[in-house]
Image 1 (spheres, one colour):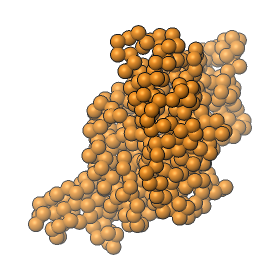
Image 2 (cartoon, rainbow over the protein chains, first blue to last red):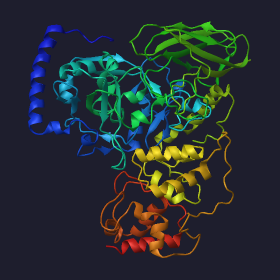
Image 3 (cartoon, rainbow over the protein chains, first blue to last red):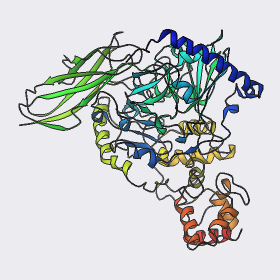
Length: 413
Length: 215
């Protein structure tokens, strides 16, 4: 389902009641000095830092095809051939932590909405569940997904060429609904999300990222509480997280505990030192230039999910090529396949249906004319006319790898 | 993950992608197995300090998989300080020297050869390859006091807490000695102790005896 279910009058009534209720809560909290907490990142560190969940426990909930790219912080993913499904199962969803996996008590967790708002809100999980909860299938992909395909390979998590992404179903409440409830004031430019996750030392700053107001108010941007019909699992942000579909994964903050409406982008190491790309291309190996900008929506991308690398087929047997294509803020127009290293291309069938930010399935039945080792390349084009490049623009932190995906297979004589 | 094969021409990425996929598949069962001991850094001047400052938050592979220029290592170290790494101003130079010497590449991208037959020695005071030394020298050489104090928890538990908990336990001395040498977490929470592979048995014995005497 791609639309918030319209439940007009009853919902408005509910909102009105909730608004009064929340306003009362906010006033009470202000009276108790709660408002003094608002404003700075430092003031927001929870007094009782959550305990952390060991990696072995997290990975017990994951399929063994997920390779661990780093233990501290935990990052893990499975390559393209392990994504041949329409909806990413939770057990296959990639893992990208910046700090430890916190163990959060859902019954005590609260989401504060503050900053440039008329009414500061304090929402519990139950509060969110009483709002307009809806479900969408949407991509989430780490900005550094595919990093090791860049030459030279930039520092950072060594994500394999494919796999640092997934497309599960998310359940939650549109952020716009929450922000309207709080009442966004004039001068609002960015919305920052604060996570409760912490590192091993008290000196480690919390993970905070902000997004522009327009994306925050776009209805698909949500505070998600569920994945694939179940409550969020701890490693994916339980009990609640932001979901900024189509944008680099770091915009979607797990274990979110505060939303702050700001007059400017948030200043902090996860905004100013990471997740940045040159405004204009630089030569491979160069430093980040002064015109760097924050990463936002993913460029057009595709991957071949069948066959996997080095699969074997019998002569005369059909090779049913299948894959997925996606793009941040446009839609997929076409996917072309090449069986001669890009000299000629054949148009794959493309299923254009699906939720706004979900990947699209493409397929083509290929009848090889010769036996032996051969390759297939996939290249997606979006509705703005952007085409996947063979070699994407190199950038110092290795973001946005969207190179043409290539898989080899063998047809036995 | 070994990545020494990762240099290639412009058409290489897709091929290498498949190779990575194969490597990843081969290593995938790790997810379901008991954790294997983390590898450590190449011995050399500054290795102990680098382990202590960096391996609290990251496993050593974050370093061992990298080959960076001196300015990139400096930049990275400064970024990690912004991210909360407990590195004092005077420690930046020895850490960057170590990282560039053993995990460096030249500005033209070519890998830097490592010094041959590097001794398992820190800058100064250098741990001797054999024999025992004064405990205060050991505490300084292995950077123990960077994370541990006599009476209060700093990053790790206080010496006194370690002594109280393990000092009279059967096998306690071996357990603490193993933790000092191999590192790891679990006894005192999730912050890992970095391993100290260069330490010898005599040094371990005198350190553990000294810690246990602090009860």
